Amino acid sequence: MKKTAGPRMVVRRGKGCGRGAHGRQEQDGQSVTSSPKLCFYLHTRAFALRPLWFSLISTPIWPQILSLSYRESATSATTQDKLQDTMDSDPSAATESLLRNDFYDVLARFTAPGLESQAQPMLDAAKADLAQIDAQIADLAVARNRQCRRVAAIHYAMSPLRMVPSEVLTQIFRATIDAGMRKLTQRSNANFKSILRLASVCSHWRQVVVSDPRMWTLPLRVDVSKLSTSYAEMVGLTIQRSSPHGVQFFLVATKKKRVSSSLVGAVMDCVERWDRIKITVNIRPQLQSCSSSPKKLRFADVRLPPYSDARPIPFFANAALLKNVKLTALDLAELPMPLAQLTRLRLYRCRKASALLRTLSQCRALQHLTLDTTGWRPATQSSAVVVTLPRLLAFQLEVRQDSDDEEVLTRLFENCEFPALEKLCIKAEQECITPLGPAFPPFVSRCPKLLDLEIGHNICDSWALRAMLPHLPALRTLRVCCCTDCTELSFFERFTYPGPNLASEPGHVHCAPCLTTVVLEFSETQYLDADFREDAIRLIVRARWWTDADAKRAEFDTPPGVARWECIEVLTPLLDDLDEPVVVSAGLDSDIGECRKQGLKVKFEYQVEGDEDVL
Image (cartoon, rainbow, N blue to C red; front, side, top):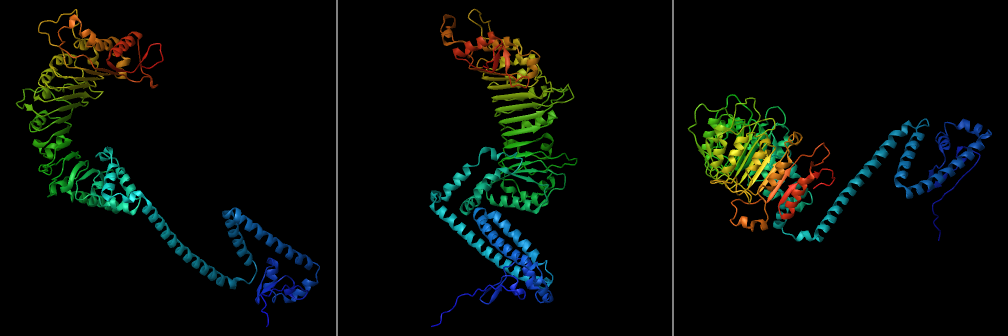
């Protein structure tokens, strides 16, 4: 039996033609050249250089070329070994080396003349190989994605969270929405980020989030000046996902351009689902032409830009659930509101006293009222409109700066009566010096249930402030903020309860007998102008403070007609931009410390003169 020979490899060397000028390996009848570039050039151009072969062989330089060929072959083998070692130690460096060698190898091939005819076949073959590799990569990518999904599915199947019912998961997701995310004054739609994060965890969570309409009822800030289609689609999708629950909108325009009809149309299409709305852009035509009514609307903050020819728009008049409204006095004439059912009202820029009084007289159910005004000139004759709000609990009056010094608050105080009022706040801008007027003490006397009074920021009328004190029978908390007339000794002396050796005058009425908490806030200007007086602080602390032992003495056999202090709080500025508290004497520190030991709560951050400790 004849044995079959394996692959035949023959290395011939000779002195004849070019085949013997360099080493050549033959394997299975195919010739593979392993010589360097010069030998490759001689091999490929053998026929063209046939006349020169004999002269080359006969010259003395041929043995040097032949020895160079063997050295380069050995060097090539050594380079391959080094490349393999590099591949094992640093794959990225080895890859760069291979790419660099391939690049220079191609350049070396094209340095030889006559290879232009072989360029196109080589390019076609390389492109075919590349296409085959790309197909393999695509198949591998599909297989990898499939395996990733399988791994995720296995992890999900092993997770205890998979056993949580969707209803419970929905309640957990809703709990991630805090109260701050429901404010209607959002500067962006970042409040939806937590919802989108939950929806991005997995397909099941996404389904839970998308299928729960209440998750999408957060306030949506709509910039109606944006004209992009994708933005309009986002707004429409959010409105759609919140159905059938109420929606909340904050309509703004960041650019001075025409309003996007598609955005305003998407908002107006769901008018019947409006829950809370804030409008700061001109959408008068859309409100005028809308045939639907905001049946679910509970809150409206409308600040339309000024318009010369403004006709009444009865859009909000039939909002049956509307209870809370914020708007300017001018807009109130243009946008009639269901005043009789309102419980909260805030009016800006109230410049006409007669119109304001007529409006307030219709708000019989009002519980919280805030007015923003510059005051009004004294009336030439008394007003016939008397405003009585029997349910009003809180009233805040904000006085703005105006160039007319004759404008006062008398017309408001002399025509209003709030018998159920519990909280009153009157404050002015720092540049605005506003007198309360002679009508303020009688106004306070018509509020017998007043519990909390705040006077702040340049309300300057020492006579009116002192005159109001006997008319506060139920007052429990007094806040005085940056008011110079409220830090005079004569003001604090009105709170002093007659001591054991002082007999009360006949018919004497104690000022604010139920007062237990006093808050004094001083500005930096007051402190630097010496309005911050230690004797005033000492007087207010000692005015109505006694211990239980003092009350049991013979001088106190009759229960006092006033309540003793529970808390005195003094707020002072941090000076010199060093976050350092104010400095007081050691005597005042001793008095405050003694009262604290006896049980009085004194909140006062200060530094004792000559001491570095902050108390």
